[in-house]
Amino acid sequence: MATKINTAMNVLGTVAAGASFLGLGTSKSNFDNKIGEFYSNFGKKGYTKTNRFEVLFNIPPILIPHTATYNFSETPRLLSLRCEGASVPGISLNTSDGMRHGYGLTEKIVNGAQYGNFTCSFIGDQAGDIYKFFHVWMLSIVKFNEKPSYVGDGPSGNATGAFPFEYSYKNEYAASINLITYNENSDTLRTFDIFEAFPTAIGDIQYNWGDTDNLVRIPIQFAYTYFKVKDITDKIKLSDNVGGGLGLFGTLIKVGTAAQVLGSIKKPQSIGDIINVVNNAKTVLSGFNFN
Image (cartoon, rainbow, N blue to C red; front, top):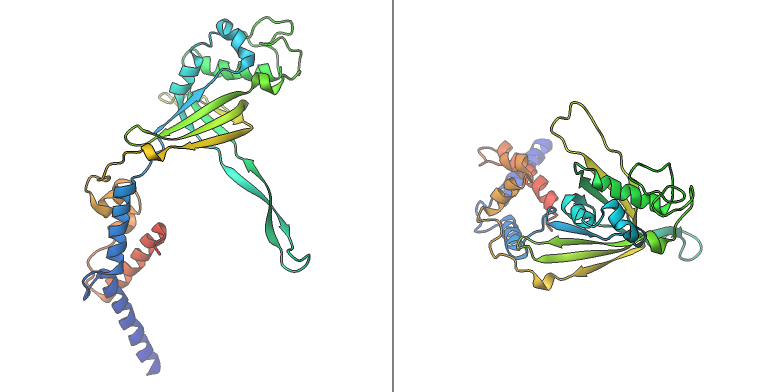
């Protein structure tokens, strides 16, 4: 009998929780307030998109004397137009395990910091000028193979006249790169000035007879010394009605977030429906980290 009573109490508690979640018997539930706050936040703060960016490149000093030889005068603009993707460099703190009192439990102690890699992806041009630019740039750093047909006729057969596997000085082959992000109004949002950058790897380029409609993409990985972030958010002019009046659920579905879960929420007809609604709502809320 006690078991049945406990079960009945659990069911009643679940129903009460479901009713509270749905706002039954109350004028406005806490969840409704969260939805209103969430939508209001998007309307006031807006959002940024990953396709609003531009990358500006410079010719390294070691290649400037050879700009006419390799027809590199228009290459920086070509690189900017064909850069379809770029990753903002990350920052991480180096830690080690240590004991505060020389014994006992260990804790993380910061002992330094480091920057992540900077990578870009380019849509290849028909003449192959993008690939040529980075290949010649890397050959100017160290002559790692026999000269390609487009490399000059220096005494050792590379762009700078270096001998096989001879290295150039960093101040000769490093150049600055600027990554600029924009908001929806095309106002500059933030810039990342990357200093003393140079390519360290030309990624694999896949060719396939079956890929009749795909484009050649050239991935490049850069090393650099440091970067600076310029935040100019005071110039942002965001719309007061971001989202087009779709409402929260319409906006979420539009951006493809939790579409399947939201589609399962329906007006409860039974205790089972209330339980499902509560569980689904918890899944949605966990994705938004509501407090």
